[in-house]
Length: 342
Image: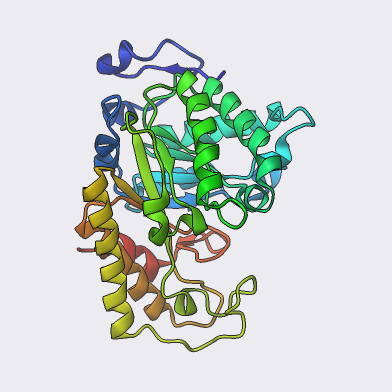
C-alpha cells in the first residue's frame, strides 16, 4: 500500500506518517468528506496526461519527465487526469505488476508535490466495451488493489472508475457493473471522490440513463465533448472522418456547443450532481488551422466555466496536444485558449 505523510496540521488527523510525501499546497486543498461539489469547486483547469507514454513499459524511455508536472502547474492548470491502461500490466490472476505500481506511485507523488490534484482514470474502455464479462473481474481487481494502495492518499486524488463505456457495455450493463465496482472502492475509500460517466463514450445524451447510489453524494459525474465531430476529428485515421479535411467551425456550431453545455448544466441542477468535462479538443494532425482549433477550445472551455464545470483538455502529449515535448514548449495558441481571459 502506498502511504502518505501529512504536511499541514489540518491534515494530521487524517493522514498517518507514511513513506510518501505530498505538498502543503495539495493538503490545503483537501475537500470535505462526502461532498463532490466541494471537490468540483477546487478543481478548475486540467489536462489529460501519460496515456500513451513509453514510461509504463520502460521508465528509461519516458517522454514525459517529472519536471513537466511543474510546467503544467505554472502553465495555468491545477489538476491532471492520469490515463492508465492497466489491464496489460496484470498477471493471469489479475494482480498488478509491482514495477508498474511503483511507477504509478512515483507519478502520483510527483504530480501531488507539484501542487496538482490527480484523477486516476482506468482507461481500458475498448476491452470493457467489447467484452464486459471479461472486463468485470479485471476492473474489480484493479480497483480492489488501487483502493487498498491509495486508501490514505489525500483527497486531492480522485478515482475515475472507467473511461468511456460503450458498445456492448450499454446503459443496463454499465449500471450493473457500477453496482459491483462502487462497493469495492467504498470498502477501502469511503470518503474518496469518485468520477463516473454515462455510456456511449461518456455522452451527454446518456446522462439520464446513469444510475448512481442515491446515498452516495461523493460522485463527480463526467462527460466528454467532441462536437461537432466532423470538425474535431477531421482527418483522424481511427474515425469515420479520416478523409475529411477543410471542415470549418461555423456560427451554428458555436450555438450548438453552448446549448449542449447548457443541457448538461440543467441535468446537473435537476439531479444535484456536480459535473466534470473530462475530455475535449480538436485533432491536431488534420491540417486544420491552429487558430480554428484554438477557437474551438476556447468556446468549449468558456461554456463549461460559465456553469462552474471543471474540465480536462485532451491532451498534453501524443495528439490534440497542448504541449510539444519534442520542442519542449507549449503550443501557445491552444494554451492561451484554455487558460486565457474569460
